[in-house]
View (cartoon, helix red, strand yellow):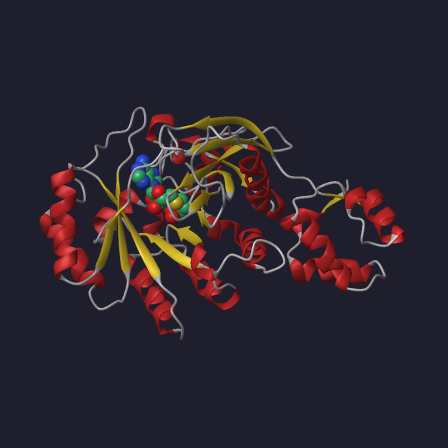
Length: 368
Ligand code: SAH
C-alpha cells in the first residue's frame, strides 16, 4: 500500500523526505501543496524535482476520506457523513458564526466510553482513526466549503477546530496530536493554539502527557459535581475520579502562559441541574480561573434524559456568575439535522468490539 502523505506532521514529513535521500526543505513544499493549496495530485506539485515527484508518485498518495452525505441545517450548520476506505463512516460538523467557522471532527469510529447521555456511545467502538483520516476531515471540508455556491450565505472559512465529534481523542493520542500539530502549523492551516480544542471525558494519564507535547486548548467533559453522579453519567470517572481530574487540571493552570480549560456541563433535567448542584460546582471550580460551558442536552431516540428548561439553565448560570466563574450557555446548532453535540452516530461496521471489551473486564463465570 502507498504511504499516505496526510499521515505526516511537518517534522515527520521532513524525516521521511530525508530518509529517501532528499533535502528536508522539500517537506515544506509538499506540506504547503497539500494543506495550503489543497492539492492531492502529486503530479501537480511542480516545484519539486522530477526525481522526487516520480518517487512520490510511485510510493505515496494524498488520500482524504470522502463525503458520503451532506446535510445543511436552517442555521447554516453542515453535517458531513465521511466515508473511510474500509466502509466505516464518521461525522464532521461545520458551524458557521458571524466572526468564525468552527469545524467539529471525529477521532474514532464510534466510542468505547459509554457515557449514558451520548448517542455515539450506542454505536459501540470499531477503531481509531489514522492521522490522515483526522486531518483529512479538515482538508476535505475546507475544499468543499470553497465550492459551495452563493446560496450558502454563511462564513465558508474554517477558523477553529474542535475535537468534539465521535470518539475520545485522548484514547487515540498519537494520531490526534499529529493531526493537531498540522492544524497549528504555519505552513499548513496556521490556527492558533486557542483555536484548536481537544475535548476529553477525563483520561487523566493522557491529560498529563498532552500538556508535555501539545499546546492545544483543552475542554473537559465534567457534567457532574460529585463522583456518585459522574460515575453514572461519565463511567470513566470510576477509573479516574473527580479528585484526580481536578489535580491534573490544576497542573494545566500552573503552566505559564494563558492556557485555559473549559469545563463542559450538559444540562439534564432533574439529574444534574439543581441549585444545590450549581453550588457544589462552584465549590469544585471556585479557585480555578476557568470557564464553564453549559450544554443544553440534545435528545436522541430512546434516551431516558430530558433537556433542562431555559429558566433552570439561566438560574444555574446565575449561581456560577455570582461566584465569578465565566459561564456561557452553548447555543444549540444544527439540531434539525441531528448535528448537535452528542447526536453524531456515523456508521460503525463492526459493533461487537465494546461487548467484547466488557466481557474481558468482567470476572469469569458471571453471566452476561
Ligand atoms: N469524548 C470527548 C469528545 C466528545 S465532545 C468528550 O467526552 O469530551 C462532545 C461533547 O458533547 C462532550 O462534552 C459530550 O459530553 C457532550 N455531549 C454528548 N452527548 C450529548 C448530548 N446528547 N447533548 C449535549 N451534549 C452532549
